[in-house]
Length: 283
Ligand SMILES: NC(=O)c1ccc[n+]([C@@H]2O[C@H](COP(=O)([O-])OP(=O)(O)OC[C@H]3O[C@@H](n4cnc5c(N)ncnc54)[C@H](OP(=O)(O)O)[C@@H]3O)[C@@H](O)[C@H]2O)c1
Image 1 (cartoon, rainbow, N blue to C red):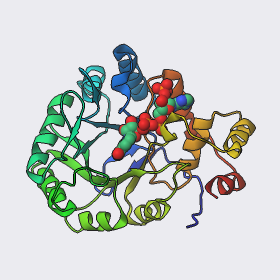
Image 2: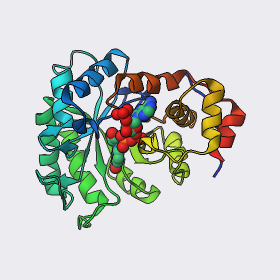
Image 3: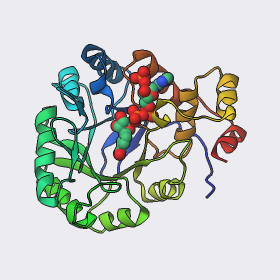
Image 4: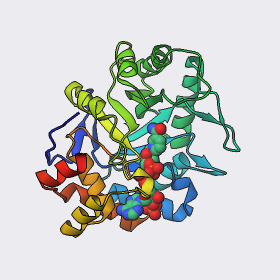
């Protein structure tokens, strides 16, 4: 599939329900692995730098350290405007092993756990992680998404999203309740989801690509390095600038525990790649 890439200078994206998030967010999955003081510092710096989109989950933890606890310690009482998105579905035992995904009946407990851990009364956005789950939850995505829609009606959740979905699963969820965001596996080294990314734009839905830097160790092509050098930029900055040019609804969530890397990633918003460079990267 081909897609016309162009830059939209908006730093924020407004979800269909009216809530706004910063297009460059911060993924917190790896923060529990960092030194806690450094992790908290990067979270505070992110807010100070205008990041208003934190991606977290109760199942992001390592031993005693969790992403939700770090967010709460660093940012609570959330005086600044802070948009927090949470994923539910996967479940882990305290020693870290993944168990069966949450059933529809268990999703309320998952949402309440995130509320408790974050010190919030309402989660801005909750994604149901649907695909690539083992063992199969034994219930349809629609049944499980309906449970989240009920929690939204109860006021515990602002917007609903889906993660790791096909176009068919997105349609199934949308038949149950409005979907505000899709979080799927997509980056320069993995572009198979381009059609769904384009569909989200047509629907006015945010598309949140993970992991946007291909996990930080991308087998990037010589072209990426050449383009980075030509702009005096880093490879991660080019990877993010390429994502941002895919549409104003694309909201990458790079993960970092380094203030310098955070600043580098945010600078991607000011890096404008030439149409020929975008075309070369997109292929
Ligand atoms: N929905 C899902 O199933 C799913 C699955 C996986 C991840 N996610 C989400 O996606 C987020 C991002 O994923 P990720 O953290 O695995 O991968 P990523 O954002 O692609 O890459 C993170 C890695 O890149 C490094 N890095 C970040 N900025 C850098 C820079 N400017 N220069 C050099 N290195 C840099 C980080 O190290 P430093 O700390 O040293 O900067 C870290 O090792 C996660 O936090 C999570 O929220 C979602």
